[in-house]
Length: 104
Length: 176
Image 1 (tube, each protein chain N blue to C red):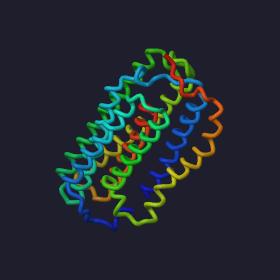
Image 2 (cartoon, one colour; image 1 turned 45 degrees about the vertical axis):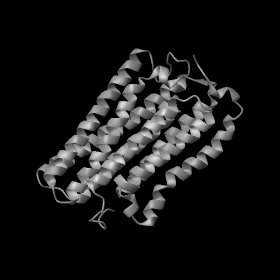
Image 3 (tube, rainbow over the protein chains, first blue to last red; image 1 turned 90 degrees about the horizontal axis):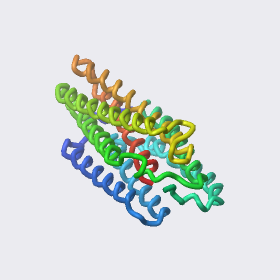
Image 4 (cartoon, chains in turn orange, cyan; image 1 turned 180 degrees about the horizontal axis):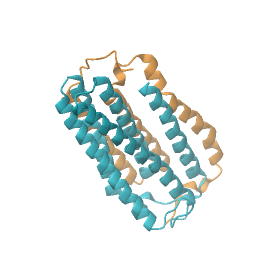
């Protein structure tokens, strides 16, 4: 799988900066977790920060951006299946409008 | 081949997280995570895993640049990160079990809460453990001079995947 790209133009500095960005995104997600905004908006923003983080890890750390397009597309299958499963199962849960109530 | 394995493993975790999402949505209530978990510890664990992932990327770069000494050093740091993570998780599990959390019931009212916690973090923790084992083997081989850039890269891919899964668990289980 990895035999066709012996030379990555990625330097240690790029990895270091990627690490810094990942920490910034983590701090952002943590901040979101503690804010008292609308639960749906919070869920949406958390999905956004999570997707941003995994894209950065996959593209830079896992060198996915140097792989061929077929492989990149294959790696998206779990996310696509997740969206399909979510859209099939989530309408089932809408009847329980109390699901946002927290104990204590 | 590593990528095919990673995608199939990702499907497993996807199924776990979807099942958790469904159980949580149909549950009439859900415990407030910040009151159950020690969020400082969880944040520290996240920090350690992300940092170890960055160091792992540097280990791959060092191995590709034919610098085994530096690669072994970076691999060692990655392993230390993995061990710290596992230690923190063992501590977290011990605390929760002592507070009465079990697969079937827990003191916070929603049985699915502890069940999904143990299954998801347990499965992820087992992946971290396998990752540490794989990295130790690769590091020992690299120290003996028996390594190739591709081998280190494959071990690295697996380690980054473990990090990716934690990013999901951190956001959807601990913060949402």
